[in-house]
Image 1: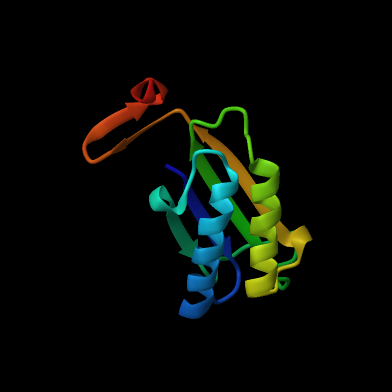
Image 2: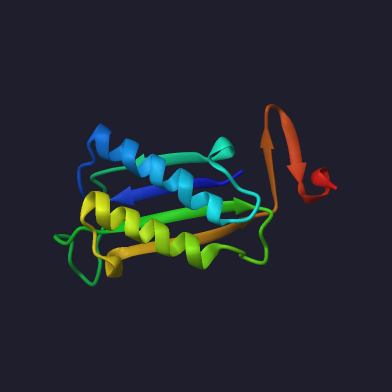
Length: 120
């Protein structure tokens, strides 16, 4: 299950959020074995972000927590597509889009503990 948190320092309309949701749903498919069906997204607009000592430029910080992909397969393609999406939808320059990757080795859902051994 991927969980992606998107923090931006600009307002995001419902239409823009829907467009980003759709683009993120397609982008996650670039990571083998992942799909929008299990994607959990959070948008945090109008955050207080500073980059290079400046808070006036549009910027995004994206935290992508992904289960079961220790080899980071598809991350370069995912990075490019997400960066493009935030540029197209919110006008954020590529140099102001930062993506942090977190490897999830275990998680819980529906009252159930799941780790890598669960899928063997």
